Length: 258
Image (cartoon, rainbow, N blue to C red; front, side):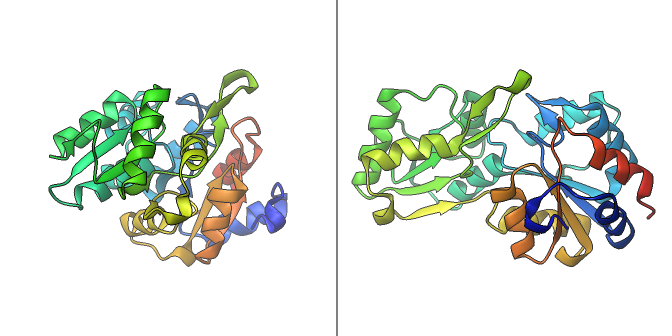
């Protein structure tokens, strides 16, 4: 149960394996690095694909992208078992109705918004959607800051500042871009919604996909501030799992009996 969010002991792993009915797993830094599944994560997901949901603050990829990555590893999961902060944030924007929306995101995610019928506007907006925009620039910062200053609502996929990359590098995340916006405008005065972990929405949607209560699942993740804190706030068990430390996933494959 990751007391104090320390690495789990063998006894804790065994207890979790024997007491839960399903798993929620993070992606970046837990199961994959730069969207490359680790060997231990692939083995874990192959063993528990029916009773596992991926709950990720990823906002650069679509559900179809994830299904393709998993399929190449021989893992078959349903769309409902993949819950992504970026996709959920765009869904929130679609609920705003016929308003002008500025989407700061990778082009593939702007395409998702366009295909959902969202009215995109790069200059004037009633709603600003902030995802992990790998093409973020001064001009985008300027346009978004001024839209917020004029009263636009802000929907943020996730608060993470970074996530792990290959060879020990870090990848700047959506939260870093949010910090840049916060340097330009007073975010306390902005109507802002953060969609991803540690907020409860993604966890609860994943539990519904598995038809399990929060008390019946364990959250596996590498970020104590988002993955584990959000899970424990809902009464879930949680284990600290990092992609470069495969022992927990290997132990769960051995110990779990459904």
